[in-house]
Image (tube, rainbow, N blue to C red; front, side, top):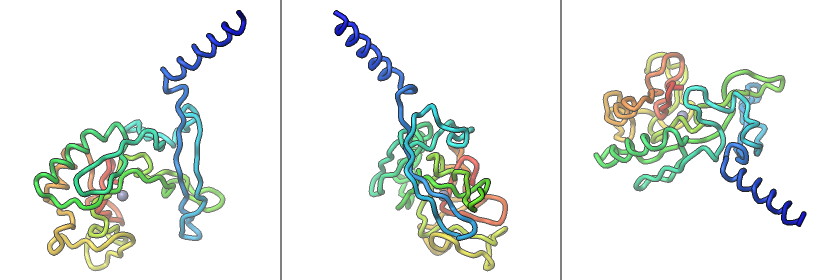
Length: 213
Ligand SMILES: [Zn+2]
């Protein structure tokens, strides 16, 4: 009789855990940190922990998106390698990109979710501790090889120095994004800012996010 009772309790507990994902869910992600002294990525590591142990800096305040791969959704578009975007943003983003491709807009590569500590406070070892917007699946890079990230670039000109991706040549290269083009226009319409228009030293022409950074 006692055995049946224990089995019954165990069954009830497992049903409860399955029914409330918040209790049972695991969060996993692979990350690295940018070291400002060595100027390279260090401390590659895999993290796996119960969802309720997430810290404040592991969840984006504006969107509620987390750095857990479990919170990301795969987006499939014609002739583009699938990529991950936060569950909250995925449906609208997917339909907007699908529509743009249908209109013949040249979207060839997209990078979304990609975890890395590249900003914010620096710890005693010289490692950055803040997660980039890509880490939460709330930023995307379009046609990176034609829409570079530049520094020394308060306004775009000869003095800008390419840090990542390929050169931005909007008047010559059809894969370079255009300020008044449909891709930039439609993504702005659904609430994304374009990295080509952010204020400050850098211009990131491949990049879109809610804050632009
Ligand atoms: Zn980006």
